[in-house]
Image (cartoon, rainbow, N blue to C red; front, side, top):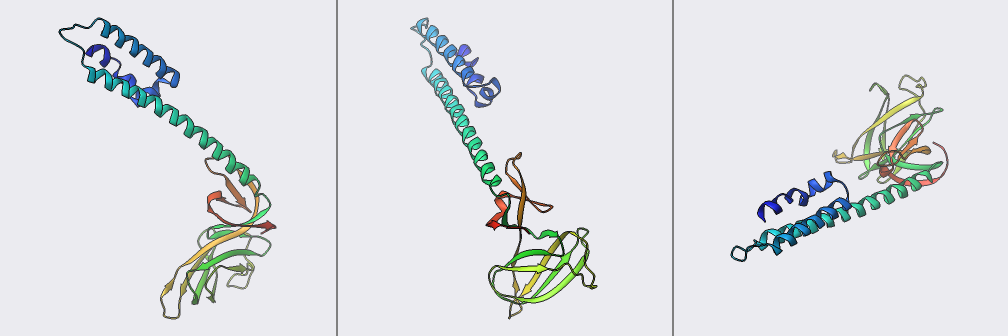
Length: 225
């Protein structure tokens, strides 16, 4: 009995079951195990009976593997349904103006806009704008009220010239009236022009910048950047 049951031990292992295939394979192995068990019970030596603990453990392991397979199938169905729902939601955002996490946005037609969200009012905030190469293009100093607010840059560099269109990043260093540092969340706002649903999570395109759907914090009406 021990040799017969031990030869099937690997079939009751979840890893082995996964490699073997699907639930039908497990069902076949389980039936084979029951046939072997029944045969051995019918032909056991009354003076040396079979170890019931061993084949009981095998039964429990088979049942556990079967249950795990059913759970995996259900999880797979839920994931598929969730991805389909997210894709449908994301597709409906095309043309909508959204606000998402991020400090980099595009300067288009002499305008770039960020949404700032200071943790509290700041009496002095230094706003530094850098280009794609990390070069400082413009710097502004202003006070910031508490709460979300829009900051628009007209594309004019510190030299007085208009900066070329492209991606620019905003960095904010803010202080309150006591001189303590104030954390400022930076977000971007713009209209969704396309949606990529080929990955695990939909990716939205705002101008020439892409953001994950999960990073979107606010959705407005139809509009442009």
